[in-house]
Image (cartoon, rainbow, N blue to C red; front, side, top):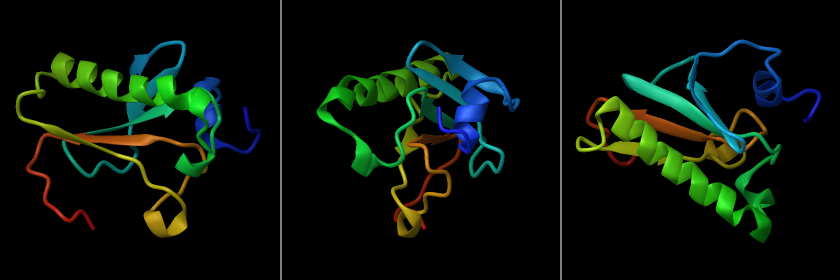
Length: 115
């Protein structure tokens, strides 16, 4: 855990969040500024700052992110309609919290390019 990390504090239960999913590797919770009817963050419990800090040992973890995204989509009944999973890396890429996380967005038509 990083002492100043917002997501580490959520993972530790120090800051409340509306949880959608939890397991030994990940948590998923509602985004505080939703950009779609279904917008939540999938966050590894392991503190990794950015996608650039991933190592080969994290390959299974990142695969698990996408498996959990699919599970949540099926649980919400939106798997057939579609969804988007996005990771922002570094400031110019839109990252604002320095703990790797993945935005799950669904429930509306998502256009391209995104922003």
